[in-house]
Image (cartoon, rainbow, N blue to C red; front, top):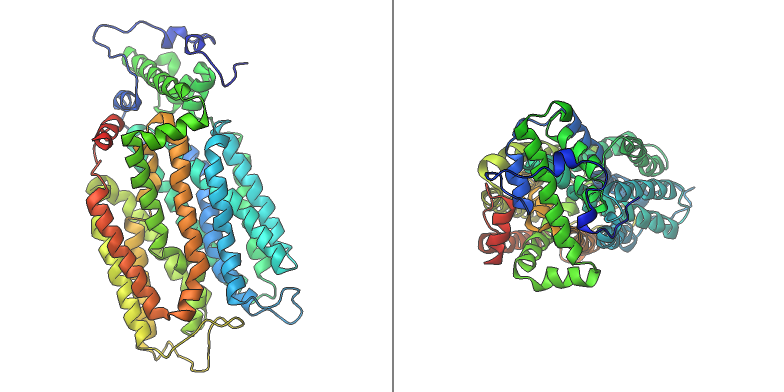
Length: 525
């Protein structure tokens, strides 16, 4: 059984020389980089088969868990802020609501940083471990009998969410045909938005059930259990298999991905498989040279192109959260309760439904418009939506988030007669549509910026930037609303969007149509 410390001269010891070791012809390029893998893959550019879709759907359940967790807390907080008299957990204060919400971001930050080394034991194993941890956290939350116990359960769930959010995009990137990489990674984001819709529907279903927050949390473990079953039918990453010396299995998986029947493969298809394996070998060799974690950190920070890749991907991930989107995901029910909508949870569904719909729109737009152009168009629309929301809040009576009721209802606002309450609903929906069209998707395609030698570490650090910014939003939003007021808070987010747009304009490269080697060369300049 080969182990993780292999010599490249021994990598073909499992009997696949007939396909892999055949001598290249004079007109056949000897490949040796991610660029070569992408060039070879251009020989087959058809639509993904059912097997590829199954791979992405099965792995994408981690995205669904991610989305479910970010949205279900919005519905649960309404009940936890107004518990029945028999509740063992007293009404949560503003600080406790912020802690219960943001603690998952802290644990997700920790697990996303650890996901790089863990994924080296296998992408499938890392996803499996994340699913198991999520189930444990879901059970713990549902059985919590105190604020402290609830916080512990939320912390455990965050460990599963953070690991899955880092490993799954990398797993999809390494399994996807190169010409479909962006589309299939965007599909993972579609699962995040789908999870948010499911969470709001379940939140609405249990909104009038005493202690309904318990089944809300518990049901989050069901998709994770389904994923564990599906993982037994998923392949490992071909890159990871080559790294461990399993060339035959890697070749078989690549053949299925590209729709090639090995026993009927023609000369061109056989050469393509040979080229794909060789290119992965060269990438594995370059990574093998960085044998220690310290060497990988030195390459990630010290090499000019890698440093720029980290700055771009980490910056986008941080901006994705600091622009305020998850403030709506976490606290939309409280915001709409503050406006006295009859059913805040059902009203919040408009946020999730818009996010889901326009994520599907971006699935079509990204290949046609390009990621840079889409960001430059959509971010100003986000700022506009936030400013309109601030305008709407400025015409409503002052509302403060209360520790016991979620809003000060001494001056009730009837949304049926309040034009400005609907202005806020429209503007936040417009903001979410703009977000989902661009910045909600693009950062999760960060793996293309990193060469194979530092891809695991670079992706983990960039994802950690997302979760650290997520923690800041979850921990501070209610406090900002209480101390600064809604108008100033939403204007602040609009200013952050403006700064983010400037950063994208100055620093985000137009990589549309580039292969991975060209992107690496661009970042090195």
